Amino acid sequence: MDAILGQVHEVVAWAFALANEYDVSSLIEAGVFFLFAGLALLFACGVIFLRNVVHSALSLTATFICVACLYLSIGADFMGAVQILVYGGAVAVLIVMAIMLTRRDDMAHSNPSRGLLQHVAAAVVAGLFLLGMAAVAVLSPFQSAPLPLGDAAPGLADLMLTHYVLPFEVAAVLLLIAMIGAIVLAKGADER
Amino acid sequence: MMNIMEFMQLATHVGLHHFLLFSAILFAIGLFGLLTKKGLIPILMCVELMLNAVNINLVAFNHYMPVPDYSGQLMAIFSVAVAASEIAVGVALAFRIYRDYGTVNVDELKEMKG
Figure 1 (cartoon, rainbow over the protein chains, first blue to last red):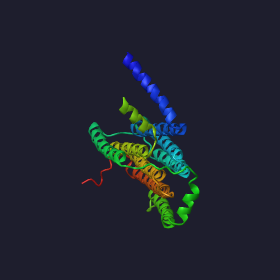
Figure 2: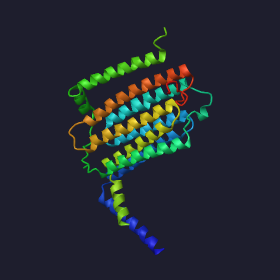
Figure 3: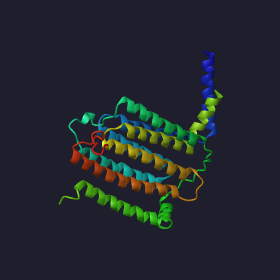
Figure 4: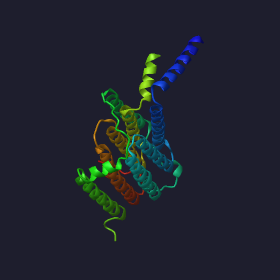
């Protein structure tokens, strides 16, 4: 009992020491990161494990919005806005529309998975990948030197219209091609 | 006890490693879904999850590494443009497959199977 109490005291003392050592903004940063990262991972699991595909789509949108909040928390304000507009708006609507167009009778079981064997194989593959990536991420000696927070849009605009102007135009052409391709695919080139 | 405290101190100080680990887990979840789902639309959703994980890496590197400008975020924006085209074409393809074959279950689409 005394040992447990001693441990509790140690933890409390550590918490106070931590609060003194760090400035509060660092703790708030950690809280925001863990809140939104945890929510994003939870909703990402929901995309896979929910039975109804409409619920999956809703879960996917929630994941996108949590990721947008993470972008905002590290000062990527323009990227966060793009994430909400493009992913939370356009991609979510497209996916819901695709679900509507490919609808089947039984919506409650509209998100089927493969059998147990494939689940195990997929878990092994994804787990090995995760192990490799985590090892690289943890063991690499990155020095964190965060940029000061500021509005990123002017810097992005300067880069986009000077040094990266050719990729910018190529992206525009790519979007046009994708639009025409989507129309041709959905409508059918052989039909009038 | 000391080790746990050191670990907690490390864990509560958010840095590049946190974002890299988070995006690796998100990518692994997307990969798992990609390999286990049967429907065409859920597979597209999982691809979107994986693309999102990559974008998080780009933005986090741009913020935490000592770089002078916003190149990483710009790469992420180009990646978003590519992802948007991909999802548009993918949805059109799914719609076409549904109209031609009456199903979006990838196990039943085996016309080209040898």
